[in-house]
Image (cartoon, rainbow, N blue to C red; front, side):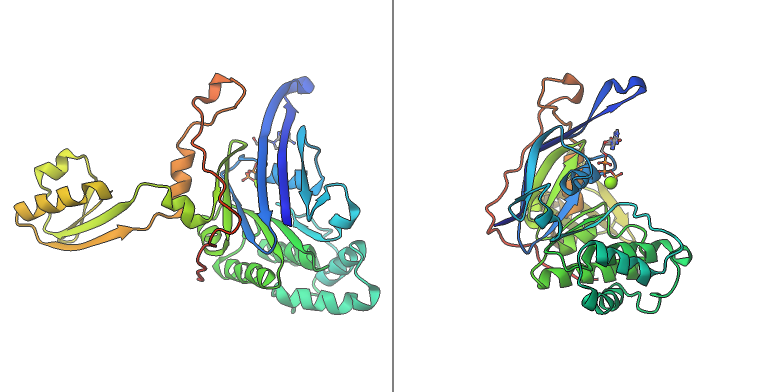
Length: 337
Ligand SMILES: Nc1ncnc2c1ncn2[C@@H]1O[C@H](COP(=O)(O)OP(=O)(O)OP(=O)(O)O)[C@@H](O)[C@H]1O
Ligand SMILES: [Mg+2]
């Protein structure tokens, strides 16, 4: 069973004075997430990530389309008991302690009274706040509040966890801890769907990612598959600081580093450049394939215009689509800080 199935969800807000002007925050979105996966939802500011999460949480209503979580409709109360959600900017009542707030959320999400104290202690420990359970939230730093937000999202042991920018406001150590926590949730068989701007976190953690831009899906695949779709490049380093005229003529960007030159070029030019260097008696120090990163993919995708799909010429040409791979595709290799 799919953990999440998004079937053409679409959202148009009405904006401006009299709310007359339509603003399409999310174009019809089709996406599936398998159970037990970590799925990264990426996009720049205003891409529609929060809108999608709000639609899935039933906090705003779609203009069209539907979605299912764990095979159930979005208004199904049985489904809601099995999901957890960290909003983008969680707001909590300042004068409660972390423990009081979590007890309150635990009661709301139906955690048994007998288990509540133990669950709250365990979740505080999981998010690294065991020492701060008795402290009022108004004394918490932004990073600590973010951890409380994550704690309330996982307190009732949901099967699917939705996190909107879980690393936001965290220092590198805090990010590392949240990454570890997300990996732990996966090892317990849970599905994690999180939005982020921090591409390295997505690259390190996710089985699959989707890239959204201006409300439109630009690609969805395992990180390695996305990068594989891009032009292969190599890095050549040679001694000295001269660049053969033939290489200059290719328009390749060559940079000096100490007494060496470094150029990154499409693989198809590799032999030509090597021959030019040898002809000029320049000593080649290294030749290395360049691994394309999610960041390279992201930049390449965002450089392209977006189609509205509705004949609206303002957005230019159609996008390059990346087919969704079969669900048994290889997961992305895991890396840790
Ligand atoms: N309630 C609203 N009324 C009108 N427009 C909205 C509303 N909420 C979002 N939008 C618009 O919809 C678009 C998508 O917003 P959304 O918050 O989903 O983006 P995002 O990808 O979460 O961005 P960020 O990375 O900044 O959080 C934006 O252009 C935003 O201005
Ligand atoms: Mg957002």
